[in-house]
Image (cartoon, rainbow, N blue to C red; front, side, top):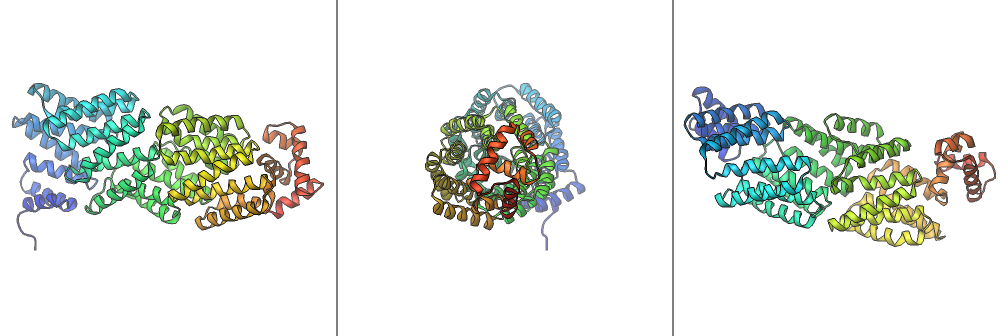
Amino acid sequence: MAYGTPLERGRDAYGERAWERAFRELSAADARQALGPDDLWRLGWAGALIGRTDDFRAAIERAHRLYVDAGSLTAGSRCAVWLGLRLASLGDVAQASGWLARARRLLDRLGGDHVENGYLELSEAQRHLGTGDHQAAFEIAEAATRTAERFGDADLHAFALHAQGIARLRQARVQEGLQLLDEAMLAVSRDDLMPIVSGIVYCSVISACSSVYALRRVEEWTVALKAWCDRQPELVPFSGKCMIHRAEIMLLQGTWTEALEEARHAEDRCDRGDEPDGVAHACYTQGQLHRLRGDFAGAEEAYRRAALLGRDPQPGLALLRLAQGKRDAAWSAIHRALDESRIEAARARLLPAAVEIHLAVGDLDGARTAVRELAEIARAFDEGVLDTIVAHWEGAVAMADGDGAGALATLRRAWRGWQTLGAPYEAARTRELVGLACRSLGDEETARLELEAARVGYQLLGAAADLARLEGARTGAAGLTPRELEVLRLVAGGGTNKAVAAALDISERTVERHLSNIFDKLGVSTRSGATAFAYEHGLA
């Protein structure tokens, strides 16, 4: 039996973080008799936390008017600030700007120093982050931190510290930025902040750590976020983003079936929570998983949905085009994305794909340039994950340059790094390169062992495209260079020397030279013999 009035039950439910029940009871109380501003504040936030954005806005607007009419300009300005901040986070920029301007006008009428000024400073810092003026963002967020300390406002303090950390990360001052984010998370982990602040800081910090490859922190804070969400089972915002982060961790750890299921749940949850950026992120993650599993149609559709919601589907879409054999499209896509990216964290996400695509099109100089830039970013980030990625691609470039011995040292270092991180797909890719390096040095026995280990790894993961590519290498076709393999595939498909030359943008004389090398390596003397070998070994 329910005891007390709907208002009393609603207040109790709000205190217990039972958001659905709080919203239902407070709405019933409001229908009986219009709520006062304090209870409208509760009603609005209960609505926000179950994904009812319009109800949040209506209740907080009413609370704002009642506070202002009663002469409580400070409380009224606080409502206006939070309307502005929340609407800005949902992409309603014009309405957000109007509410923040109203809050500023109310505070100007009051005069003096108020904690709400710190929230307005924070909105300015966020604006500067959006325009790329990261130093200004840091300085304004630092001022907001001092305001929070003067007034003892834990919500503003955590919020402002987190904004400072984001600004430092974008300036490539990674260790300083991570320390600020860690400090912000100390306050969040105490769980005495407004739920909206905790949720925003949790998700933003995890995304920021992911952008600089601080994967240990990503995993730690994702576990903490899940526990926080689990204590509020009716919570809609943030729970979807938590699922996305969990899906990304599963992807890295190689549990791809579970990761895909989690990403699908995340898409639905973010859609319910009116979080289009979360839906786009979930779609992109699904695209990554479909591509790795060899479901190119599924990947195409997932990347398309992400793009429609405003997320650039790179580098995943460029790598999909590469897997489909559309090298020119892959090259154009990755270069367009790099041309638009100025922040080092964003470029670090794109550069590994750029190296892979440059190698695929035979542009060794372009691959070297991309690896050098990635290595420079890794030194600034000082995170072991990026060092491991650099080692892998330095080894791949050395292999393409014919330096098998030089490749081995860095590739083995990369493999140890992936093993430590528990990243089986990346470890398998590195072992494949180790096997090819050994084969280029004449160590066929070790090559077979390494390539077999890579094959088992791909098979356990369900990495269909990698398995198909590796089968040719494992059965002996890896004695061919990547370019020779391309020539063999085109010839096996019926291409004349002229057609092969046009497809690969090389001369017919170069095609003839490649064919001579192919015939020698395969022990055949005719195009038909090479074609038969290609079909027999799954290379056509």
